Image 1 (tube, one colour):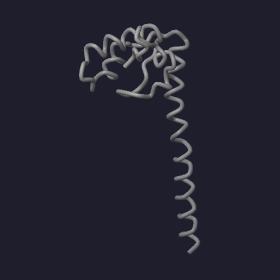
Image 2 (cartoon, one colour; image 1 turned 180 degrees about the horizontal axis):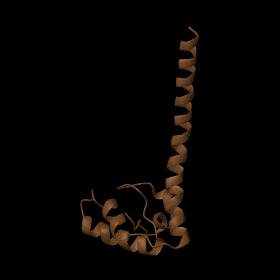
Image 3 (tube, helix red, strand yellow; image 1 turned 90 degrees about the vertical axis):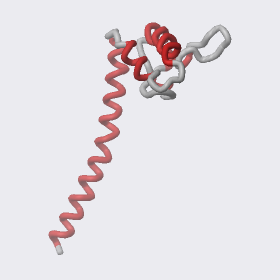
Image 4 (cartoon, helix red, strand yellow; image 1 turned 180 degrees about the vertical axis):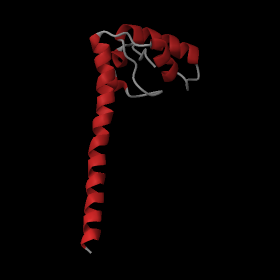
Amino acid sequence: MAITKVLVASLVLSLLVLDLVQPLQTNQVTSNSLTDAAVGKPIDCGGACAGRCKLSSRPNLCKRACGTCCARCQCVPPGTSGNLEACPCYATMTTHNNQRKCP
């Protein structure tokens, strides 16, 4: 009976530790990518924009706009859409008609 209690307690403790470690790893990846841009390391705008625009209905237009935004801001939000909070400069750029410039 004591062995079962120790086994259950260790299982619960290990699940708790894994639950705490996962957000730390996610934050570390995000902070590293932002640090690279802040330090001045140039990012691969072509690769970042290709990933951002891969599901676009007009990929050439998307890549051109994304490339302009990336060159100015030195960052591209992760994923194919949304996530604009990861790159505030990218999110605030607008066209002459006050529409969002960056895809």
